[in-house]
Image (cartoon, rainbow, N blue to C red):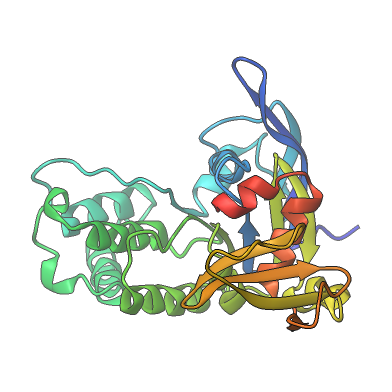
Length: 297
């Protein structure tokens, strides 16, 4: 039997001290390309990312990369992994170029000329070439995020795990990062963990929605949205007017509150709505009993 090409997660479970379950039997099958992992804060996304990056072991389950058991051979993954966590630290007084070169050396880039060429290319890619000699500890939040992206891309990773990647980026930087991800995904498995629906909608061919440590929906954005056709209605409720019961989600509007309802049409003021990934996301969380988390996200 031919091994699956890509990332396989089977029955992954993790419970923290105090009996708090973070992952409850997560199954994923991720081929090369961009794959989105959507979920609110506390859904278990960061726990899953840290586990995939071999920073912690699960209580149960398995992880395979191109058929290789990652838990049995973590070194195999680490040599092929790029990881961008939510928070990035830096040694005081050390420049971006020096840190990147050190990490490139640790990734096996022992030829000095090739290592410098790779670091120069990455600095250009994330628009930090002009600030390469500055200490990373002096970088702004957006610059630090871009430095983390370069760090994650050292060694041309087979698996790139990015946790809330566009946090702290302005729109231009965000678009640049999206282009970088799309380029990397031509030859790698890229797992994009976020609570920003638009990032997944614009980038990912497939996605999973995680809530309460479980996968509550999985598929392509179009396939997940298709069952909602003819079942969504929207209207703007004026300021001060009562909101209809059972609203799927709410959003601020200049004239009041934009309301989206799932199911029967609540009244003539409600027009049909074309379903999108945002609606899929809110309905999946509501169905999982996490409607409050959906609104908070």
